[in-house]
Amino acid sequence: MATHTPQQITELEKEASKPEAIPALMAYIEEFNKGGPRVELIRNLEGAIKGMDCAMEITRGVALGVLAGIHATAAPGRPLEVEVARQQVQRQVEANKAVIEQQVLTSLLYAYRTLTDGELTQYIEFAETPSARQYHQATSAALSAVMLSACEAIGVEVGKSLAVSPK
Image (cartoon, rainbow, N blue to C red; front, side):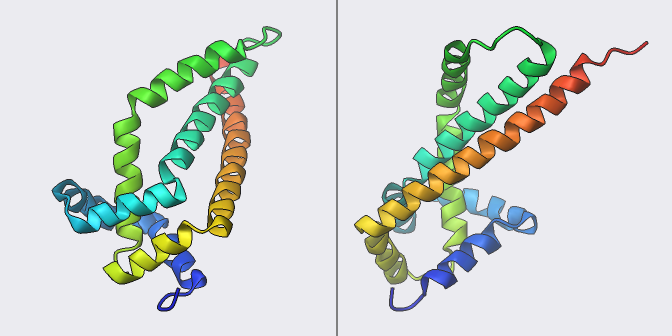
């Protein structure tokens, strides 16, 4: 990319991910709802980087991890029916797909707000290359695995707190 280096793009993403960016990010929901050419570019970018696929996978992993952790603590010795749990989680995630999509697209709209349409188009073209697709796929898989592990640990702690009864 001629104007912004990959490092600068990463910095935009990091800045947009900070907790203090949340109020400003929320303001972009209205811009997203207006639609228009910029939102279409963001949709194209999401398609190139598979942002929804990543978000859906992470959401499934988070829900399944917490559920597994709580179950392990709340029902010791009783194995989790993994396939039943996956199906339940999948139904919940699908029911929330529109909300997840809005969050993903609004986040992208906010993160890349300082890029011109031309720069965003260049980034989309880059994101569609085989090496960039491979990068986004590997990053998504790693993030999903980390989130599943972390959420399972959180679920265990939640399960422990639920298992403690007041005396």
